[in-house]
Image (tube, rainbow, N blue to C red; front, side):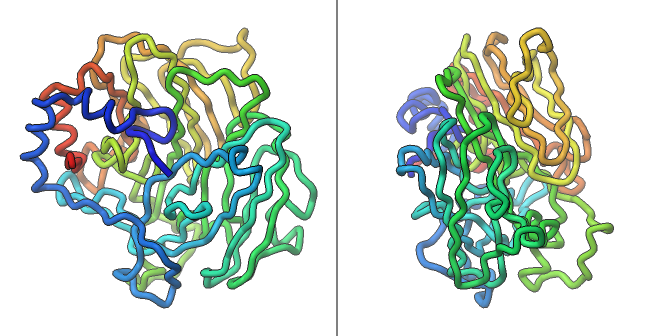
Length: 384
């Protein structure tokens, strides 16, 4: 599946991005690749957990899967993989999870977070959980929509789980428009922390998209957990002693978050109406702040915020499993502005600041600047 440059959503095409950076920017970037350690793309095939971490494919960035265009059905495979959070040797890196349990939609690459499943109000979905390559049971639980008991995805209350080597199809009605969350609900505390979560978007009937529309999942991680499942950490897992030390936007930590292909920069043009669907896939609250732009929260957990209740803000605090859709007009002086969690220790890679849960709003008109070239150097972008 083709992915645009920028965060998942309506970013730029490759041609648009290269045109925006200009010859000067590209020539500057060409000499800055020595710091970059680009993660290989996900490999074909079906590795299992018996493999060593070095044999596993790397994840790819999450993509938007339009389930309507696939006749209302999607297959979600389970795939062990490696996950490069920040693969550079600078700014507190490298940060890598040697083993995650990723979702893989149809023939696309596995990703953490999982793919964004997008459909339209009134359209039912058939979601087949393919655990053929799995090593343990999994389920899929969808927040937000109202479904039948046996399709709730919780093994302890429905009796339905998908053992290793088997498949199961869930019937998921798109009867509550808005932005929602899905995740594995088998030993939830462990499986979400191994990467099994993603966004489920139901567009209302007559939906009017914004000029730019992006999806972002934020998450806190205890890096010992994926290391333990790769055999690289020796500790007894205890949720009560969980110690988050990695903080991500769409699975990446800054500066990798600014990478135009692997990361999630918010690319805009002056005057754009920008809509961002924010989802908290972790276990901690995160006050997300945008520099130099005032925004409004227009949806929360699938509910429309009445216009009379909307007001301009620059921070929205997102609790675990909450979904906030925010809107703003790109009316600032064209430049590069940060978007980040305002818990300062969440914007770090280990003891290095800045890093972590931070990305940026980038106006296309400044992509040919020296500072943008420098940011691409930090992010590890190599023009081909």
